Image (cartoon, rainbow, N blue to C red):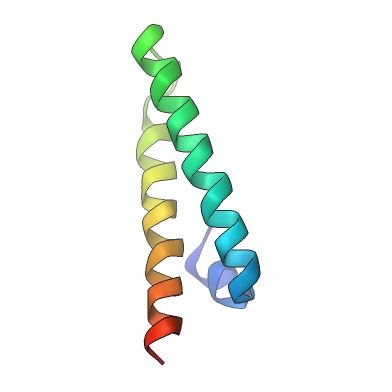
Length: 63
């Protein structure tokens, strides 16, 4: 998910997306600990997307 896509979402949608992404990250991390993922870079991509969404939420709260 790109930054431009994140900015277009509403605050409620961002909070929902953050929950989904955190669950997805936890699932990927668990799956990777059991058996190595085919593409371990997925972990990095999801983690960074979580950070982007969380940063946008914080930015909106401070405004």
